[in-house]
Image (cartoon, rainbow, N blue to C red):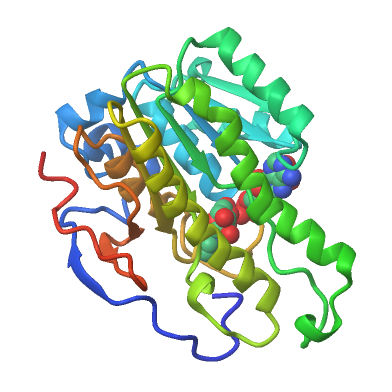
Length: 297
Ligand SMILES: NC(=O)c1ccc[n+]([C@@H]2O[C@H](COP(=O)([O-])OP(=O)(O)OC[C@H]3O[C@@H](n4cnc5c(N)ncnc54)[C@H](OP(=O)(O)O)[C@@H]3O)[C@@H](O)[C@H]2O)c1
């Protein structure tokens, strides 16, 4: 993995793993494997609306197209419309009905642009069933010792994108997410969030903050909306070939099976837990691993 220049701290210990996660499902055979979902779970996604940030490339694109394949509407956000259109073109090539895929251009570090994005989504759908926070920046190229040498400007840009914007996006989406009875939110983190790799300190710190942001949002929403079925979790997507990691040979569709398993979960599912795309349920600090298989029901 690009940020691993030496062995990193092992990811948090795990107690359980969900069986049946298909990391290597070919996207063009989606009708056959449904990315590991049973028919009822696949059909649960149909007709729902999800907002996917960072959906013009990488993991966000793969997740948005898989949701659309299942018959969900995907609102796809990034700063570059050309990349969002490429997402639709890739969907068309996979035989997916991309009329369900709606580009919403926005810079998620801007509250004004986020407000505009939510307004546009609200105009097109009365309610959001889920938000998948994928947009992020990689470690800025700042030499071997960024914690000693990175400029304040680059640090601020990274933290604003990888942390503050994740908070702002989720906060902006909450009214639409909670206008129905259930909502699912995912934060994409990284093993970097538990690592101390020299040269990658600022990125590691941004992902450690996302870990806490995700589980804190989960706890707060459980307290604030006790009558709603809100499931907010943090997912380690692992390594794949994306715009920020061009050295990998692994397909970004490798994350889709676990993402759909979490987004399609019926009531009383995990809230405030950590998962890995390979199905592992992770534990971290005071946060225990989720104890049930997430694909059983
Ligand atoms: N790929 C890996 O090996 C790997 C490993 C561990 C974790 N991850 C995590 O997985 C997530 C997805 O990353 P990826 O690998 O798919 O990388 P990617 O292809 O580089 O995607 C990042 C996306 O974020 C968007 N973005 C960046 N800043 C933005 C802003 N201010 N406003 C709106 N959109 C913005 C970019 O689009 P625009 O430039 O058009 O805005 C881009 O589409 C990230 O959280 C990343 O940290 C990736």
